[in-house]
Amino acid sequence: MTSLILVLRILHIVFGVFWAGTIIFSTLILEPRLKRLGPGIQNPVMKALMPVMTPWMMLSSVIVLLTGVAMTLIMRWGTLNLLLATAWGWAMLVGFVTTLAAMVIDFGVMAPTGMQIEKLAKSFEGRAPTPDEARRLAGLNARIETLSRMDFVLILLTVGSMAAARYL
Image (tube, rainbow, N blue to C red):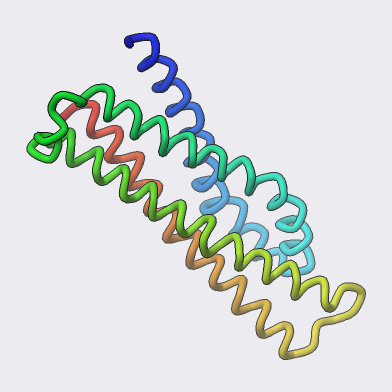
């Protein structure tokens, strides 16, 4: 069982670092810089990155969630009824809930919004967007920006709760 926990922990940490790191990098560095460069640069760059990033982010988040649940169940199987009687258990619950919330934002809201942006951008490819198209595109980009910030906060809460759990 110890080697299983070790493998699960390694997978959890490696894919957690990738997922959280990508969100932190994107929110703090990539998206603000692309926004300053304007939609002429931002949209093609994001169009090139999203087909690669989305599957990796989805895979990483699923691995993080499943390995976290598996480790919690294995380590506390005989005392699951007491899980929320400990600070460690509460930290695990916070990490679980914030992970699920981030996954919903990432794949339930941001990914479809990104697809809407791509579809809209294709409709005026090779020409300047109409004022209505530009307004819709700006609204969708603003939505992505807001969701990215929410996702960033959730990921920080997740990482913080996992770090704190180690010492609780």
